[in-house]
Image (cartoon, rainbow, N blue to C red; front, side, top):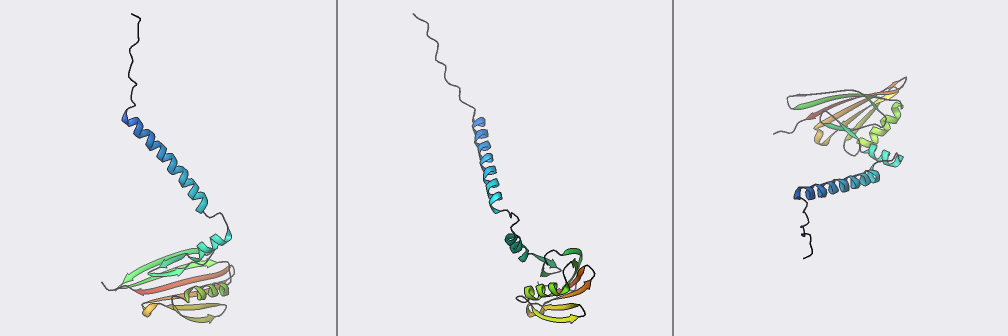
Length: 161
């Protein structure tokens, strides 16, 4: 009788290797999708996109949100709470003239606050009164050799618990 080799069954891969292969494939797929989304949605330096992003930028001074002036350089900020009232101070500088900053803040604050503007020398002062006068922001613009220095002081009553 001729010799016939025994048929050996094919060895199955252990389940752990199948799981590892599927997991590795998913990691690669998620990485590719992430790169595509990043390239599609990340700002490319287009001034319209950067301008839109800047228009929505705000900073909390105490409990009051104030728009951030484009290109402003933050100098310092403090905040304190006493007897249910939060007070905050912010200083920043800009190379633009005070008139330009005043126009920016008058336009941006008009929709959320009642404004009182006072011209002071080459600068000015804006007092912004919030809803039901529970918050007040005072912005003082002072001309400097380099442009404008701005001081923001806010005062807001905390809601009663």
